[in-house]
Length: 141
Image 1 (cartoon, rainbow, N blue to C red):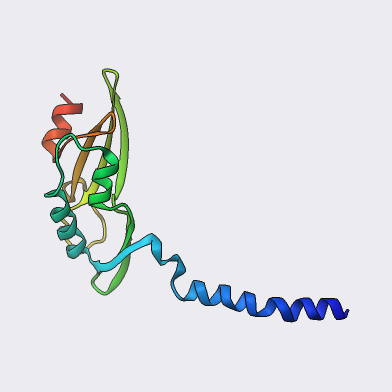
Image 2: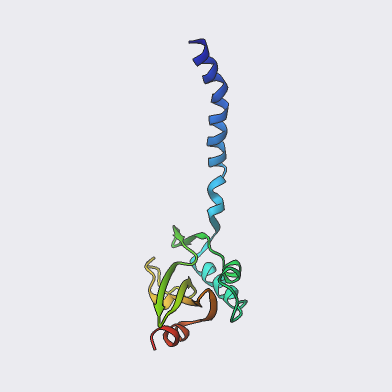
């Protein structure tokens, strides 16, 4: 019985530390920031201007970011994946990956449509362009 009490006394401070770390935001590294949806979109547009054709996906992700963002719209929190979504496609033996970043939010409905995103198009891991026209030309033509 004394061993159980001693074990309990010794481990009690450790469990408090774990709770304090979680409460202090240890899990916050998954979130890039807390911004309005418009600020997220503007930051994505600014980052897109830094992209260069032919760069690797890894380098493009370093520029664009790939963390969730806590955004606010009409006083309500909204967690946005950044990139918002990813698609993998194959056409004529070429592998494409499309990353969609929020750039043009319109409306306050918290529902996003394709026209609110800018697609980044990678062919075999290399950035071949961005914008819907590139996506249509490379994949849907």
